[in-house]
Length: 366
Length: 167
Image (cartoon, rainbow over all chains, first blue to last red; front, side, top):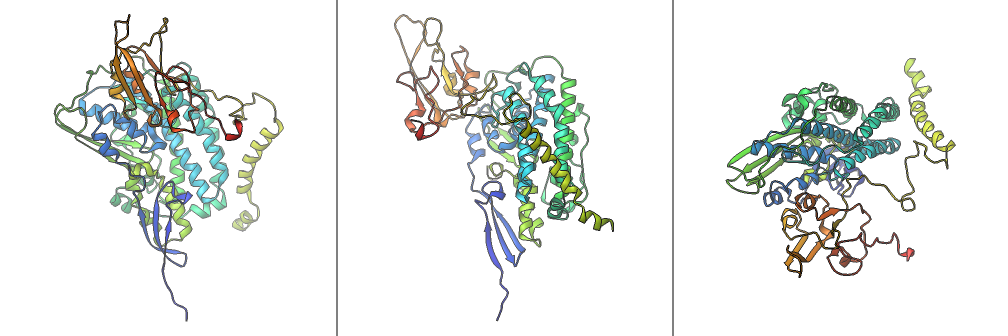
């Protein structure tokens, strides 16, 4: 009379909690997910191929548009990969300013994550408070490079301009209030019983699975692996900074929330150290007028807010543009862990799993 | 017993509500008072939004004191532009030693406001102005040049209306 049948449904690509145009194919047994496959490619623009047809200088504008929530971190990776390719040493002041802006970007990206993730799960208030602070970070971006989201902040060899007048005041104003703002978010979420019911023990990803899948960033650190490229392979001015790598061992959505909150505190610490120890000097290295590459290949990895973002560049002799360009996008590789987290759980927890991944589809599809 | 008490008395939810309550009362009791730090929204179209001095807006051609176009057609901006939105046609003008741009076309709809053109310019003849309200109803309004009414490269663009009812 009655028969059991599995139902196949699509989550997305226009679902608001899939953070863009991600489509997840789900097979359900009642409310339990038995099969889960993310389908990507709706936002494919061919960034890698476009960059191969543009000069090394021009390619940077495309890195802004990959992970648009953390454009500065992407710019940093691109600039440093190119400096590695051409063998350019960046002045120390430029390194400090890069570190400073990169950490501001980490805060902005984590705030966007906090707001949207909490909103997916049902806590709308945090979204408004998180975006209030993000606005200040965007104002700092605007004061430094003139644009809020697609920053194009750095140049190969250093920076375009030094810090603007009045920049220190903006930074100190932000730092003075930021720790109390973080407490506000934690008051709203950390002990909240609804938040805990939706996140504790949900979407587990063990350290073994995470390493096997190549997952990096806060996802990996929430599983107890203290791997952070800022410490493991220091770049920019991170070797001179004193900060900790927050880790958790629970490996669930709640642990990822705690790791990201702790990371924002560490970022504020790094910003303070950058402002205190800011050296004087030039911000741009001496460069030839036209950059022509030799036969060479580099891979440079940096820690973006989402995880390890790596740029692979192959140079051709006398060429103005890279012969081959590839991005190791953290979102793309972190997304591969979604079936591991979602299968066997409830369909409502798929939303929590996607939220805790902190994905941006512009970077996954490229 | 402890767990039962915690279920009965929602201290965690009260903690969250105290945050929203604090913000609500701060704003509510200081309503209509200006320059209060916790009023974070602005009445944007009525009160003009401020931008930082380095803001990257629309591309603008500059003129020198005599009213001459400063551009000398070195084509550096045309070459550096990642989206190829600038087209320059070189020409001559009487009483001017340097080349003169007969045409300086700028297709704003594809511009990404990266400021590479301004950076590459060795003669300081272009800037990005502070205009950000660049919406328009017609596609032709986005192709700017050195000639023509309301869509030239020297002054801010014609600001699009916020709604059709504004006309």
